[in-house]
Image 1 (tube, rainbow, N blue to C red):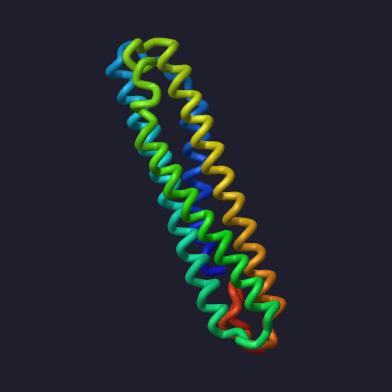
Image 2: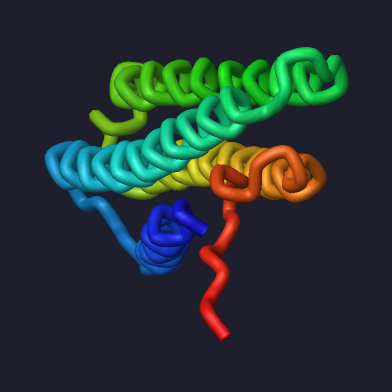
Length: 172
């Protein structure tokens, strides 16, 4: 499947985020807290960029597959429209999460100024929140990818060459 490289990079990024989140960290000063939050924001932003790449690649594959399908089949058109709507919703969610990441520092600025355990707790809460968002979007993309592959396989008799996730057939 063409998106497997993106999926593996995303899984690696997710594993990295999980490990980093599990590491104990203690901010002693407001500067430490701001630095720690900046590091987490960079991690979240990187994970979202990977998801954005996956979403874009899947969108392109769905569009390419839709162009090769019969235009007069209402079931094919309806399925493609549903997948496009899900991916448009995913794109909007990614934009909203990026906005929320940029607002994370102002949202918890009071706790960051105090440093110590209050800053740690606020950063940990933000980290859980954004990791949950990333996990949900990742699951949504995986589901869309599986559905698109199933649809492409179902429609394979129409055009084997452009099926999403289709592997070239070997000789002999």
